[in-house]
Image (cartoon, rainbow, N blue to C red; front, side, top):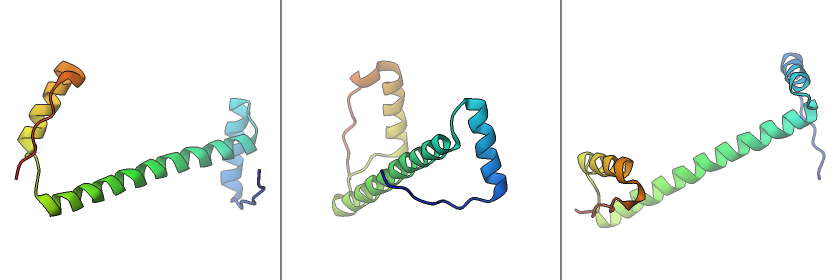
Length: 92
């Protein structure tokens, strides 16, 4: 473990202490949880952006796509049939 220092304004620190007391946790635990949750969210967001950029690059190379209507129809099938709905064929 590594110790780091975090400067907070008094209002934020008071909010953390208050919530920690209600949850029967330490302020330290609350801050660690908050940072871990934030990092997970941001890492997932960044991964999503990277997948989108890769998909865009792939589209630029091959032009394969689905229309909005085709995607909507497939999503409706997925809702009804679950994972048994066949994936539609991409086209140019």
